[in-house]
Length: 354
Image 1 (tube, rainbow, N blue to C red):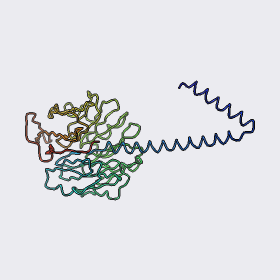
Image 2 (image 1 turned 30 degrees about the vertical axis):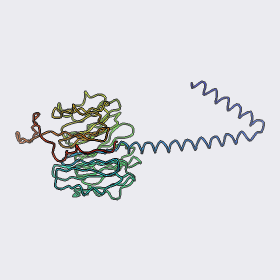
Image 3 (image 1 turned 180 degrees about the vertical axis):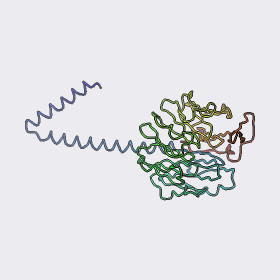
Image 4 (image 1 turned 90 degrees about the vertical axis):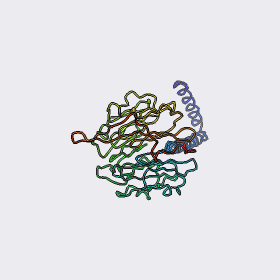
């Protein structure tokens, strides 16, 4: 309907009402009053529905599979949780009694601290693992719609767009109390990133590699992912940006048609519209992956969730070398091995879809 037609109809209505009022017909005023009341009620009902839609949508987009260091965790469609671990510090019986879970997140650090978070449908959190810095002290959290486990800290997004955090704050990574209008969060190694509703990004914490400051000026972002050394953002047009434009590791400038992103220390992964996955590193041959609906990346691994509820995984081999007083990683592209224990997930099925 054009503006001129709308204007004409509005004018005709007001002319009729004015004529009735001029004749002393109070019924017209009552009609206008009740019509306004109904419109106002409809407005508030629609707003309530929109808030509900947003909340439910964010639950649907919650991460139902997560991997990092020696752990991979996933939510089954019945709200229970599966876990495999390459570390004796974690046993499945620690989380086998979890229920009503809608999302999970795994965090860890090079010093051997690891923790696992579970988000329940009622907005509360369950957590197990290392707690030397208070990173799993989340029992009093409520109204949470997204969780993210960092190296030794934890971040949660509330339904009102505010953020809560627990754990180590040595780099200021917990300084999120003033954040507002946040729609997504990601906890990295010593830093925290938040995505605002306007598509911009806010970040605090450790910034040795520019993983915080280089997010300033980003816009039109719809998703974020963090590691220990860099941050990646997904734009609404299916392209991506990264804080580390290192050739072969984090350069995502040529990515197109991306729907989700995941990042590990030196590698970035993008999920394409067609269900395939792209990596910035030749260490990963993901050409056989298809029908993928979600991805998660860890220290040296990546996992994918298929549309049928099954999962796939890949890992790379790396070694350490000391050169002129510094440490660098040496990669072996020809290395082939059986997947480590934390990626023995080929028999998983019925994993909850995002």
